Amino acid sequence: MFKKKEAGIPESVDTLLGANSIFEGNIQSDGTVRIDGKLKGDLRVNGDVYIGTGAVINGNIFASNVDLAGSIEGNIEAKGLLRILSTARLYGDIQVHSFVADEGGIFQGKCSMLDSAEGTKPAEKSSSKKSHGGSDYKKSAMIDQIEDEK
Image 1 (cartoon, helix red, strand yellow):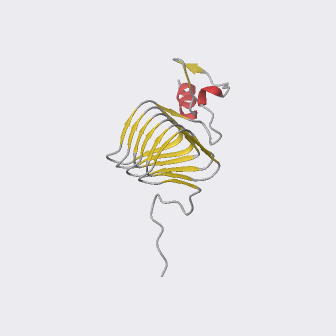
Image 2 (cartoon, one colour; image 1 turned 45 degrees about the horizontal axis):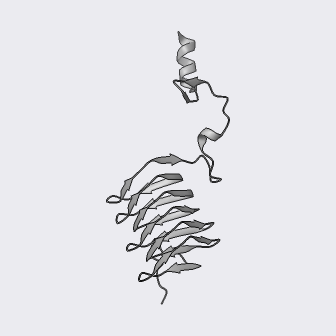
Image 3 (cartoon, rainbow, N blue to C red; image 1 turned 90 degrees about the vertical axis):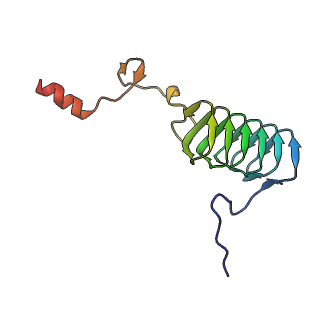
């Protein structure tokens, strides 16, 4: 009577590029976008992006969350979660808040982790932590106790 919702399939999609479709140009949307065809251009979405198994994208993606099962040649910036499924092929750099890769998925590029859901890089935040070797760190309380015992 009730159909089970499949994993990775959104409840509703505002924009759909079908499996037999080819689109050249940039797409911008405030809602959820699903790509099953071919896209040559950038994708800027305030909502979520679902890239189907047979999809091929040559361009960059900017979105809240990205579910990738197809092939992308370009960069991805996800303010939330980027999930690379086992059938995915990603050739480009990513900037993400959270990152999950299933076994079998391919990712070739650089990964930068964003500090918060607002999409800021950790290096952009001012820090009053002591620097050691060029990177910021917080000294643990355990280290303080060991130094006090000396």
